[in-house]
Structure formats: structure tokens, C-alpha cells
Image 1 (cartoon, rainbow, N blue to C red):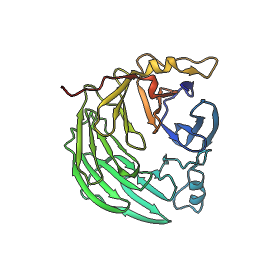
Image 2: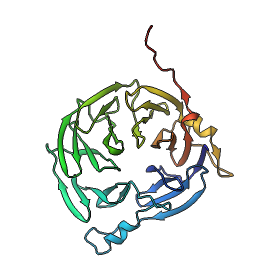
Image 3: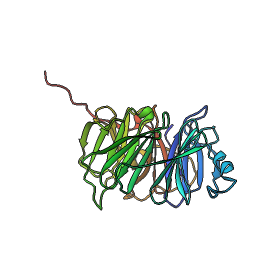
Image 4: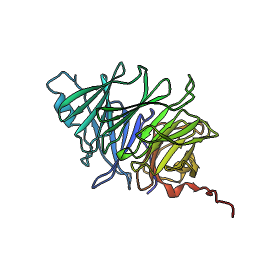
Length: 303
């Protein structure tokens, strides 16, 4: 299954693994343009440009209807000039992150404005695509949690956020787990705001995502290019490997294609419940599996 394709000479903006009758990998080369690949084979199955219109336009509903992948899956999130749209798996709930940090929740055609408990700039946002739980991280390190339109509260995670911080936020389906990083540690919490685990790391986390079931967390190291996998329940490292090594082991789907520069760092990440992993380095997209990474020894209790 491991494959790679040189898609563009520019950096990929984001990657999404989209389950369905045919599992697809969506690679966003521009804010409004996605190329779709069969996840197993790497065969390109289509490209679509989503031309946004104003939310006040009578064509807004038509635009929303286009935000579906070729396999029928609703796109997890789409960026427009006005907002970033997050959508649940069934397409019935949408979350709008408007410019100016305004959050709007749309459910069954009705919009509700979400009010943060404490006024602060939002730096990361996540939507549980199964039940509609919402998590927002602000610049002061507080995590704001909503059960759809109902505010659960804001919680100080004691993160070390500064100008050099690379914050990441991911939420599992059903809100079973919330993962937050300030670049130096990973914090596991639940939808009640209770911190269940803190895991410091010896490197700087560039990107962090979790599998939809919350059983795995994947991070990238921008300095060394290493991709690492952790257990979702106790944040123990299980696998790791250099991204360039994964690229070199993957089947090249073009007759002529160059590898990215040796010092280039992994960009976007994605992982599904089956352990399929996707990442990009510059404009090269790679799909691989957990089996291609090196397994790490698990700590054993002393007898």
C-alpha cells in the first residue's frame, strides 16, 4: 500500500482520510482546491475546486452542497475567505470559525453564536465529527469545551504558550478524548475538562493529530523529520520513523519525480482507525501504514 506522489511544487495545506465504500485521501493544494486519491492504491480519482460565495448569498446552500468528496463523505473542514467550516460526518452540524474569532454553530438550518467563558484569542479549534462536541484553545492556554451549543466551561491546562509555541488540538469521535499540545508536551483531557495524562517530549512538536477513535496520536518533529505514534489512553510512544525513509520505501506513482529536500520537515498529518497514515513533505504526498514504522519497546513493570 505505501505510495507517494509529487502533487505540487508548493506545500500541501492539509490532508484528510475520508472513509466510505472507497476510502479516499484528500490533499488540499490550495484553500479551495482538493485532489482525491484512493488511499490503498494512490490512484487519483478526481480534483475539485470549491468556489466559495458569501454566506449572505442565495447560492450559499448550493456551495455547501459541493463540499462532499467523490465517495460521498462530507469534508471535515474547508477554508473560505470569510470562515473555516467544520462539518460532522453526517453533514447535519456545521461550525463556523469566522474572522475575528466569532464561533457560529449551525444545526438543522439554525445558527447559534457560541460565547467563550473568558474573552481571548482562539488559536486552535476542533470538532467531534460524531456527536458535535467542540473544543477551542485560546492564546492564554485555556481550553473551552461545548456540547454542541451548550458551554461546559473553560479550563486552564497550564500550557507553556509563547511566541515560539506550536499549538495543536485534536478531538476523538464521541468526545472520548481531547489531545492538546503546546509543542513541548501532550495533554490528554476529557469533555469535562479533567486532565487525565500529561506527556512531556524531548523534541518540538510540529503537528499533532489523533485517529477518529482516539486510540492513536501522531506527531511530527520539524527538526529531525521523525514521525512518532503514541497510544491514545496513556500517551506512551509505540512507533517512530524518519519521514524521508517512509517516502523512499513508498512506491513512486510517477515515472519522474524528485524527493523533497533532505532538510524539509513533514507538514500535514492524518491517521485513520486502521493505522493508515498520510503526510506530506513540501509538495510530496505519502500514504503509508503503522507497520512501516519501527516499533518501540514498551516499558514493562519490574517483577
